[in-house]
Amino acid sequence: MARKETKYNKLFNSYKNRVYEYALYMLKNQMDAEDVTQEVFIKLWQRMNEVKTSKLGSWIMKTTRNLCIDYLRKRKTVINGEKKILQEKDKEEKTINLAAQFETKVVTEKVRAVISDLPELWRSVFVLYEIQNFKYREISEMLSVPVNSVKVYLFRARNKIREEILKNDKVEV
Amino acid sequence: MTKLKFESLTDEQKALLLDYAYGTVNRISALKARRLVSTNYVAREFYLENKKIAEAVRSIKEKQLSEKVEERILKNISVLAEKEIDLKKELKFRQLNVGFAGAVVTVVVALIVALLVNFNSPKRQYSYSEIREANKEVLESLAIVARTFKKTEIFVTNDVVANRLLQPFKKSKSLVNNLFEVKK
Image (cartoon, rainbow over all chains, first blue to last red; front, side, top):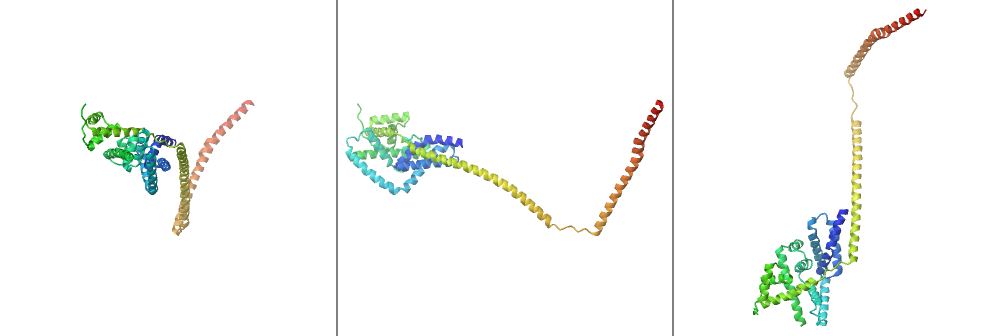
């Protein structure tokens, strides 16, 4: 039991923020992201002995993604509502902060917002690769898609982010 | 200064420039990208825009899970761990109990079966000839025993009593008598 706890604590410490951050990008809601994080780590405790040690990392992220998708399905209507509110809030902020729109902080926030609106698979790939620094092969395992598809999704995500940011800039100007 | 071209980019070139902007290219690809950027205005714009985005992405700080949530998760896990330990203990106890109960049941069943078998088996009825035969055998064996006793009696009287007891006694008696006579 002590060995299991040590192993668990190690995994918990190295994945807690990654899981939470990924869930946050997927769900765009802090409380949901915290709930998902908790569920993931409870599942990890229950299934730890059934999964190969070398695969535990990708298992954690895969489980996180599946739980996020479940949450999105369950709360589709709520999230749609939230999205509208956020978009309206965004528009308001854009008109107010026209002068400061080129500041790095604003760009970062914009990028963050655009990432959150990417299609699910592209978003997953982008967050896992660019923000959480996973490798192509690891992401391919986590999302159960071929490595080449991961590359394609990443390309599309990067392109989309640029397009969206340019589109927003044009609207503002 | 070389004049820049205005050529639209292919998907392959875009991918190359994106990788270059995000800093995920090898040296050869980086050289290709640099050449493209230095010759094509569209490529340069595309690269610069994405470079800015990549910098913004890199500046996104990792979101930290709050300590409260962390504590809550670890608390739940410790409860689960305790439950697991209790369950294991209970299972062991149950296994022991099952083993013990199994042994007791086996013994009781064996006893009952043995009793039933003995109780149900009918008492054997011996025929007249069998009884007569048995009596004859008993008489014969008694006769053998009597004969043996007789032989033993003869042996004891003739050999043991006469030779091993009476003779040494007589010898010692005469020796004592002789001694008394010499003293007188």
